[in-house]
Length: 186
Image (spheres, rainbow, N blue to C red):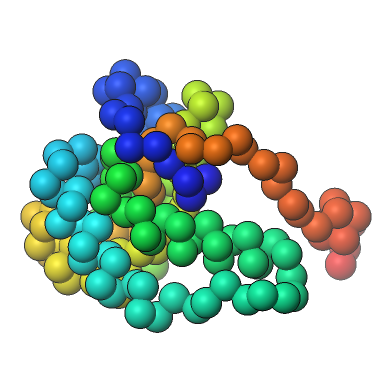
């Protein structure tokens, strides 16, 4: 959901989606995640400006023809990018190398953070909240890190805007199961 209302999200709902995120699996149950939740209006404006300045210039235009799913996704991304200041909550899914315990490696960070982000997104949808998995932080990461005061060892894996949907959820379009499932062998 890339169309979000600017209405505040109650802290109880934010805590519920964060709790769901912390129920995710992680390598060796390492639980190497941290979440930076940004609700302060001035900090949200600052983040929106940094993301907009970095991402809008490189965002591909919405094609007039071609794959309808891609057109909708790009149109939604453009909408979100042009309404960043209206996002009521930003959640940055972060973590440091904590696994394996005897030789922590950054290679394992995504194995903990992506499932946590997915749990958060699924819980948000179940609670009637809109979110989307983004990497908006990637281009302006240095400045985002400064705004958030992240320690050097911590990485941002996912940037999640969170809010109440401004439009109804649509059906998800996925490839048919028989195209992606292989029984017993490829």
